[in-house]
Image 1 (spheres, protein in one colour):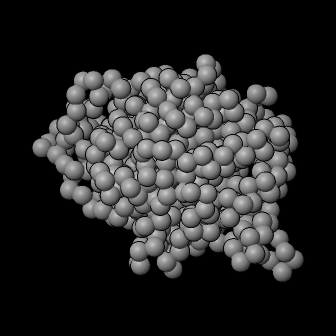
Image 2 (cartoon, rainbow, N blue to C red):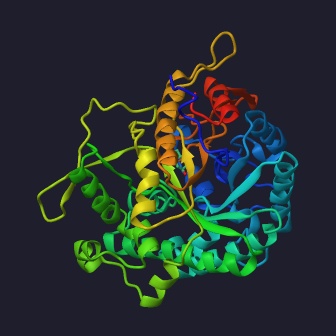
Length: 452
Ligand code: NOJ
């Protein structure tokens, strides 16, 4: 247990939950929404667990009021949601779909009525299928331009209700898993040169979108991105391993966060990629590295680093097969990631405003005969990560808010509905939501502004 007196957060610290459009909304063919690459991919046999799709998901499209009430019941003050690009531009570009905009205006009004501040992610992987067909998706700079147009348009339309925007969510997930490993939409396995160019187009899209959002929103708007960057976590907190973890963090994130923060591709990365390195102009780098107001970090599994005498001066510590993980086999438990996840960007890149845009875990949740869900492992997971978040805040690192992933169970991409990340349990047959033990835990954390 944690001592709530010791683990209090600053009064200004903000607590909330996160979701993403394709994972919760459903209503896939409603309100004029166009198809996304995830509709196409999940409907293709063999791509997702049991052939599951986001067609209905949590039916949040119709139940958003009830879901916002859940947030309110927790005492959440912030909520991170994503906007579905194909709801706004069913064809990716061209004529906007008013019904799509109206849906989000209704959601935002409901949040305002409950005094919950929205943080909107503009791209959480549901690329309009039309852009995949027309341009091969992120393989083309045309998609980067289309993204900027969409981002500028929708940020402008929402600007009187939304102060905080994230351009994109988790580059490595939608690019590396989608265009290298074929595990996520669009299910491609590109060669290294094509892959690196696709990565470049995605970070360029982020930079172009930052400009477009700034140009179309009221003053005081904050822009950032939400990235599951590789958090080099020192295996032992001694000077040599900490130093190695800093080096590792810059190098391992070279194609994404490092180029965004530094405006350069590290020499090591370019050399290592050789002929497959991305092609870019100095102007691209300037756009990509536009200064940001916010950094969102998605924190899950650890990457432990040790000092090494080789040329890189660091090495990734391999995890033994006995290393503990949550229900998702990849979700190894590493609570210190939340501390280092905040500390590294503050120290390496002088980032001044950090939000934990996702943290949470999958658990083999079941409804007990008494109707409750006793997810003791999720409570354990959250408590340990939050203690590390408290450490970061109490040492003065600039972390100002935290979003649990996720408010409720939802479509876990290729894992379908098989893996549950919610603090509310969703009975997919009835769409009933049941607060898990972790929801009661989180509510108490929020109430006391402390790890309990
Ligand atoms: C990160 C992604 O942003 C989110 O969509 C996903 O559900 C969680 N990780 C859990 O895997």
